[in-house]
Image 1 (cartoon, one colour):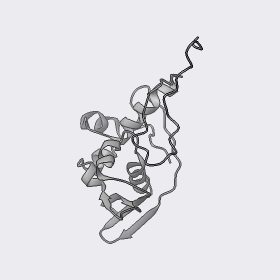
Image 2: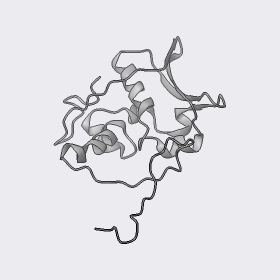
Image 3: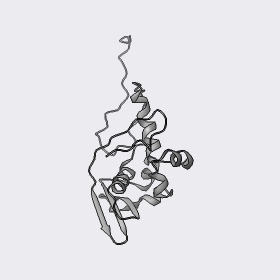
Image 4: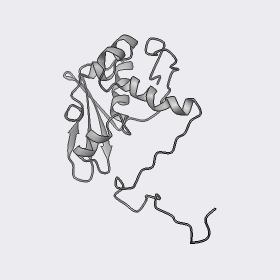
Length: 159
């Protein structure tokens, strides 16, 4: 799936190619919906992570649109831990058309969170060969999988 084609690119942007698998698609006369199953997802994290570290639902909606699925397009997360359903519109109140706008004019005019604009911003530094360190603690991790920890050299071993 191409995130950006020629009409979506702003000056200096190259296409971004993304591959993935949708968890669930539901189709009906009232439109098409996509559901992303999560082992744990909380509403407050969904808001904080949306278009920062979590791009799945907008990408899935973009894929549905490219396939010509029946609008309106809707999306949400389902926490498998507590069975809480979090609809995308509870996290991002922008219209889906603004969120998924691919044409350069709409991306510039929207000014808010937009999938194409945000993805291009995320990949800009690595494409320039820059990989800055962004320290992050493990407060987001709910298990001992996190390997980030403070390490100190023994006294006299510096350098």
